[in-house]
Length: 293
Image 1 (cartoon, rainbow, N blue to C red):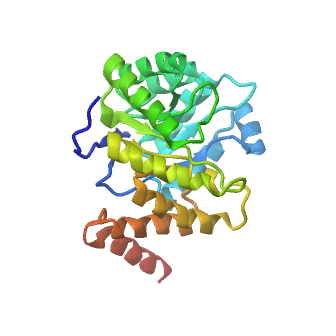
Image 2: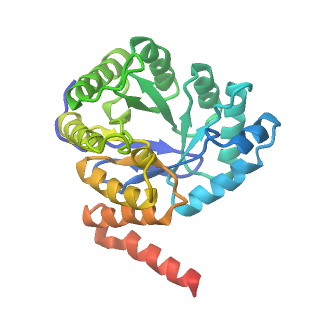
């Protein structure tokens, strides 16, 4: 397992759009909204076979700037594999953007991958041997990329050293035992809520810097986790994400319906020289000015 300092690029494809995640690329926004967790009405609709809310969610996330759409169909008392396959077909009929197929159920991941058109991102795998053995063959079979979390036995390590050790294990097993390219492993450095302990954010930033420097892989996380339980979460998110970008975060699973956070990320791209000549920033400003006019 070696890293020679070259920029590793994770390439995802939808039915038309290609998205490249990389340390030399613009930050990748993964829209998190197509997820029934904590959405009782959405869960009831899905149980009744009503997928109309997905159409609204796709539109809102894409309009907000999502490059990739996370699709999760973890609804109790449903056939999750069938539901996820249906949802992926529907989302791909509405947008050409790539999808992040999100499930903890191996059968659901396989069902989703089997109908997916393009090159998907799979969310996610942990460092336990049995999870790696169950999910990595699917990732290889369907030529997908994978989000991996450096935790084991349902335990989230609070020290950066342990997260680095587990990251090394995941990369070694994926590359050496399953032939998955290092560029196709996206690590989640475990962004924890600061509401209980503000120092957790420093551990996450240290983890990001060391993963970037030691392994060069791309990273993502659930960005809204960090501000959970705190007031004025949008302001916290708009500060945290650009800081995380300087530490090596290259994408985030987030709600792209929040302009304050999306614009903070786009501004950070300009300062990190990931938006050459600021052209995307200028184009977005002009489009906004034209829309209000």
